[in-house]
Length: 142
Image 1 (cartoon, rainbow, N blue to C red):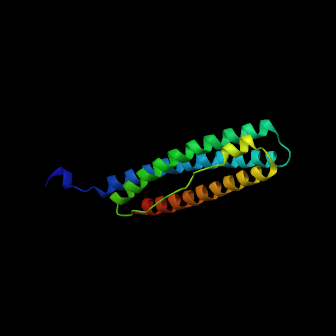
Image 2 (spheres, one colour):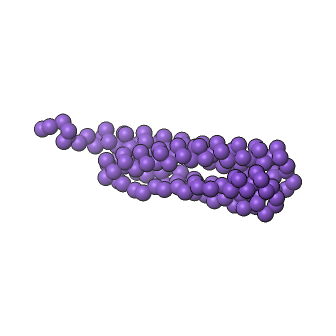
Image 3 (tube, rainbow, N blue to C red):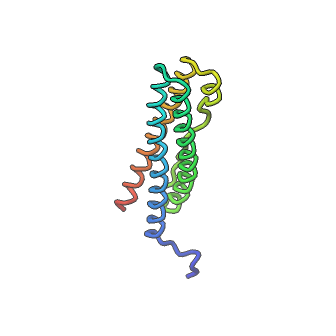
């Protein structure tokens, strides 16, 4: 039989697990930065100033980078899952953190909106982590 038609389930399963682990690592890194951004956001909300805004912004930027990596990793994971016939659509919306408004119109209302965005992103990342963990558990049991 031609090699290109050979299907090695164990190999595909291992590749899917490895891709899932990479996605999980990226998601957890994003989660950690979002948690830190949330904490700095609370400081900013309750009287912080320029320094807390800068620290929060830095954490948000780092979280965004991790989330972009997670999106890439989740796409790869999804491809690998299709190879083991467990295709799922994993999508995380990480757009707009209102960073422009936070930097230029630093005030309570804007800080509150940014804090809500951080919390929503944290929830989305947490849900993605739970989904990836469930899929990985199912793959590892096979």
